[in-house]
Length: 140
Image: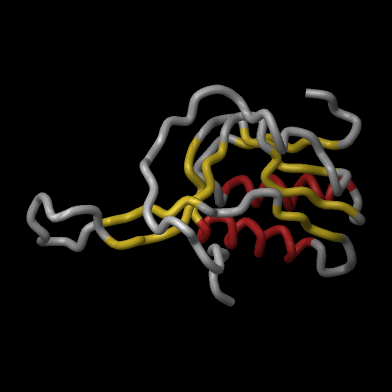
């Protein structure tokens, strides 16, 4: 299965940008009963999202649902090795998602809490940030 990436992009290359503050949107559970919440800031690549998704869907084989709440829409460019300085930006290497603290990354529903906690804990290991398991009842 191909990695998650935008079908079409209007502007092929972007600036790196800053990541100040906390997540203003996407910081509440919207679909499932359990979620994976980001506690630190980072870029998350499409490969890492796919790896975490596979881990979560492995646990929902007997029923249940998984929602991916992030999408890698930021292109990251890289110049070829051995290229001299100058002559513009490189080619698009991969797509990443900018994640700030408080952002809900994945949601799950339709399975027991113990199974969801274990699945989300394992999915958190696939990501380059600190994460936290949350439920509908927890308010933080």
